[in-house]
Length: 453
Length: 141
Image 1 (cartoon, rainbow over the protein chains, first blue to last red):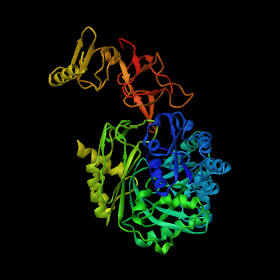
Image 2 (cartoon, rainbow over the protein chains, first blue to last red; image 1 turned 90 degrees about the horizontal axis):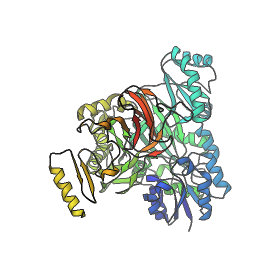
Image 3 (cartoon, helix red, strand yellow; image 1 turned 135 degrees about the vertical axis):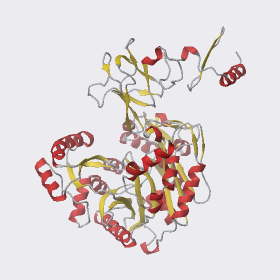
Image 4 (tube, chains in turn blue, red; image 1 turned 45 degrees about the horizontal axis):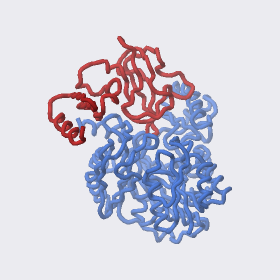
């Protein structure tokens, strides 16, 4: 019997433990002191304290996690999402201990984790990227030259940033001259590297991504698209699979390019290629995430595949036993992220103890959460409480199921955004696909708040 | 006092029109208050109560700034930077007093009124709970 350690907490740790149970793997959970009684530690076969509440001393503490792994003779480590999931250093350290890290090789992680290097690689291989500088921009003079070519507004982006962080939107030449040195300094402080690059700021775009699954035996498959356009402050709130209201030929092209991108960087295991889609149907490579994504359940739903199981199999050097032409999505799935936040108080975080909770259910309704009633939503980690995932025969059905599920959901003790999500699902713009990545902030939020007053 | 009696008192107090009831007997001090989530022995009540219980009469409790959320308390924007509101600092209503980091977000806490900061009641980097007292204003300001 093999042993798998989950280097994470919350819902993704619970999600991974569930698949391990299914596969007959022994599980080791690690936890910070304040998570001693949390759901993932309760569900695992063994749980080990790895440090105090501060993430850098526990969930980001490579030494401490590997010490726990050695004590229990762990064979595999799943890093989950966030924390160490994209750390090539962690992967190296696992390898040195003879433990399989569930994820791509360190080279892929290093290349794709550097957003500007990834961009250069895409340009060199002829993949479409957002117009902008071809590499890092070191001086204001060079920045102005790029701006002349691509026009305003543009974005200054930290090479080591990502996930919506380290980005500044610039509207004119004056602002560019003023902000350029500041953004470089900020990048150095936040990411330890001052290099920045420039991209055109495209408006009214949508976020569409392709799920990739690749093994060591030369098989690279895609598992279709997900639309993650509904975001607030660059954080995804509602995702659906497959992407709809997009020309089928465009989606096809996107899927094929995603596979070629993964092959071109020698990618193994599960990964996601993110694209930006313009209103005219042009799409550009944004980044490739070298881990499982939060929104993976919607893909699992429509393809009938357990992605965590597939990840473990690939890490154990198994061959993917499906061919691309055998993979056909069925139905439509929607995920709503329920966060502990007070929508009416400008989305202020709302940590606290869940007094009681009613979780929706029924055929086609899946709820992934790291919490049970009486558990504490800690202020020290992110605010996601659960994911409500509904799968219907078609999009309309999935929307109606999601609305029903959110109406069933009750969480007492904290504020959350279920009502906000429900109203999004009922909005005419959402239903017709008339949305873009700033739609929540620029259009819907106001509409929602007016309806509440 | 038996627990049942306390519960029946709470019941009665709930139905009454009083905002605040204080009972003191030989071995028990009980303080019940509307709009506050706490009903604890008087001795355990902090010097003042949450500023958002606007229904209660104005008293010296307006001098304290409470934490709206649990998290980690920071006196400055980043390590090594100048504190927003050190002791003795004159602040204007709306000025940033501190940051509470909660759920990976930095939440600025603003001064509810103008005045002079008399005490900073928490340490930089300390884990705090919602409703903890953070700052005390100097009297008479």
